[in-house]
Amino acid sequence: MVISMVAAEDLLFLKKIGLMGGLNGQVSGSSQKLAESLKVSPMTVSRRLIALEKGNLIIRSVKPDGQYVALTGPGEEALKKEYADYKRLFEENSGVFWIEGELISGLGEGRYYVSIPGYVEQFVKNLGFEPYPGTLNLRLGPAAVETRKKAELHGWVDIEGFTADDRTFGSARCLPCRINGYKCAIIVPGRSHYPDDIIEVISEVRLREKLDLTDGSRVKVEVCIR
Image (tube, rainbow, N blue to C red; front, side, top):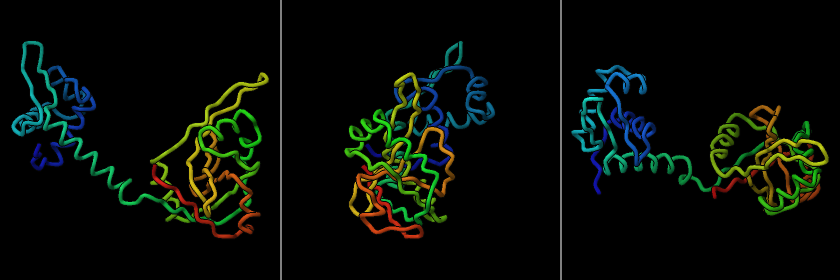
């Protein structure tokens, strides 16, 4: 199916309709109600719907109680193409993200998690390794912070909270990665106090010893897109 070029304004409106009704659903109501839902003027709703209908991106029917609007096959394909473009932008242009930082002594929030069996069992199951009872803390520069934000769009592993021995243990998230080939994960506690330029890493080995690292050492973290 060939999709003609869709104006950016029309594509944005098409996305809003899709979000309201779903790809297989439909949106109904008066122009005034649609305008309120889409946070635009009734005149804009009318103009955009006419343009989308002419482009065969939507179908609509007008009835006494309002109008019914639904995406057509070409309309769905236009949104899928937009999604694919963003997917390539954030994923396919780089299968690997490198996050470089300076080794520091940290608060050790993540160390708490690697000392409790209920968490360790989840690390083994979801990450594929039993972590060394300690963590590596890295301070990132501005460029690395931006790379971290992009990498964090992918592949988070949820570590669920639980109750044991009449105590409640909170949740966490892990981003699988590697350092010099060793299995690792960036860990973010559910109630983290760390700023964006600090990451805490758990690993299958004691990295300071294995890689002869000291505070101030530069460390590269490899995050692979799965």
